[in-house]
Length: 229
Image (cartoon, rainbow, N blue to C red; front, side):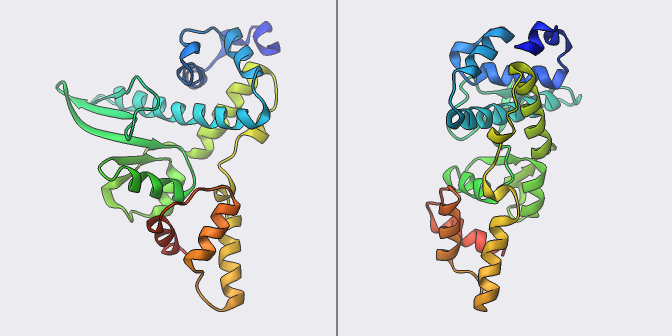
């Protein structure tokens, strides 16, 4: 609020304005809300709730970035976001000459498990993933997973910094992708295997993921993760 009172509302960058638009899209009651209303809205959440709120805003911001990039690149293809932020399967439609040519789901994550779960849940919908996890997958899924052209780290930092400017508080503790954003979890699995003299089992992988709070409900996801170890 201090940032707003000091005139911060006139100094938003184009990307910061997209973060604020993502916040407005995150809840129906925020449609058309001014910055004061947005700041007051965020102030009402507990720390536990704030983690989910920030993660959701970050994901919508990624969708807005991809949509904007497609619509200013000068080609005949345009991108349209679905009106509902919880549209099943896809987040964006690509259009040409008034026809839908492709629907994609966007993932602003660094966890390979999130991508694998998305592919299994919606096998007919391709994924645009942030650059880090797209690089980690190394083309393993062909055209099913495409680099969106945006860095998860950059998106995360831009979301956090914009919301911090909005409410005047440090949100770093609420911005996290879980243990899989670093090498700690994978390192722990591999270390255990080295000590045991064998490749980690599916049970080991599932156990570590569950202890990290990552839901892995199928053998497909666990088996695919093993291929990367």
